[in-house]
Image (cartoon, rainbow, N blue to C red):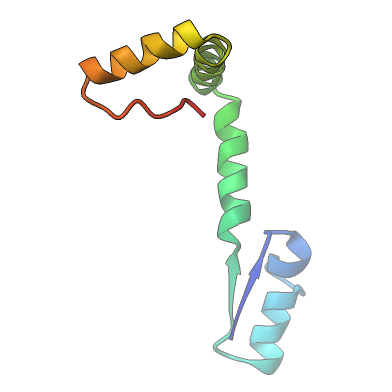
Length: 92
């Protein structure tokens, strides 16, 4: 049996928590794991505080704004995409 939780201490603490109690009292092969979606969210929150990551995000926002506000800019983007031999997909 396995349970996935968001890392809250009531589920995954060391003593007197749900996973520990289930393992000792009910199921000896019980596994408690940290939910991957919540773990990824924690990683992204910690990365965002790094200056390099926030600068990259700002760069992507500026690029999106530049290419999405003008048809002429979008045509420049597609020309650039042809030069570097890509399909010129939209900047999301």
